[in-house]
Image (cartoon, rainbow, N blue to C red; front, side):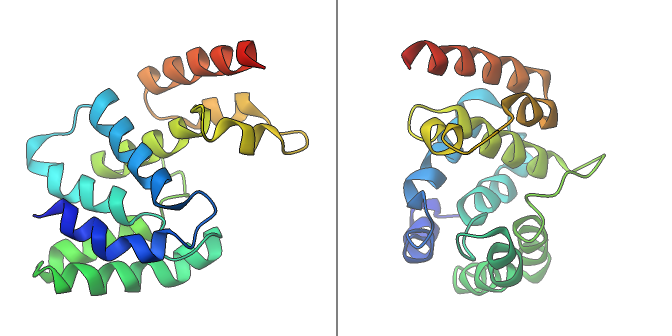
Length: 160
């Protein structure tokens, strides 16, 4: 899979979001740096990460439009129906919190939440009235992500 090509196809859609394609790059870098992506699930995981916010800036738009756009782009890349279906399902549910998600879902979910604690995104969320960082930390699937989030939260508060 040519991830750069998929990202190039996705970028015009991603730029319509509040945090843009830069957010997607942060999620991808976070996933690759902090999580062990099983080799047999790498393509599914990376494609789901690249396409996760493709539908628009609201969760409603992402869920309604994202799977169809993701499907179209993946078919353009020559992916088979089963793969397209798996990625589209993750794209259309990536804000949900299932009890036993697949490994690609879990990696995307934790990486997506973890970038909320990044230098670039923290101020966006922290400026919201009564934003509950502890609630976000409790949502992580992995203990490693919880630990990293707590460390980053401490860092961000020290920077203020």
